[in-house]
Amino acid sequence: MDTNDLKKKTGATAKLYFDGYPWDRPYDLWKSFDKDLALDLSLFITGQMYAREKLPHPTRQLVAVAALTALERTDELRLHIWGALNVGCAPQDVAEAIFQVGVYAGMPVVNQALTVLKEVLMERGQWPLE
Image 1 (cartoon, rainbow, N blue to C red):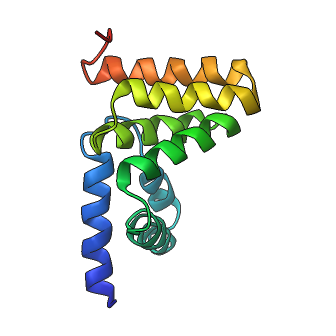
Image 2 (tube, rainbow, N blue to C red):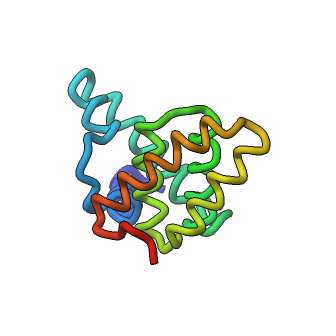
């Protein structure tokens, strides 16, 4: 794939996942320190990894939510909860992925992640759940 095609794929995937995301994105942080490296990271992470067709986008985002919950990476978790909802995951499915992590990582991380999920849902006008 040539660079222009990769840039288009990266842009399309970023729009699919993160369209409307109101908080700071990692790319913006990277770019403020090193524009060239930010582009390289974005092309790889978003254009090659996130855009892979091995797993459907909703499944991929639920995996990201579970991993980020276990690792207590709340800023990235917020971004990927947003992405999960953008690609069609139901809020209840995102919550279930978070609850499942409790068996392995403990309930404090579940509580932390559910708080982030609630914040995202409130921002999107999807809280309270029905």
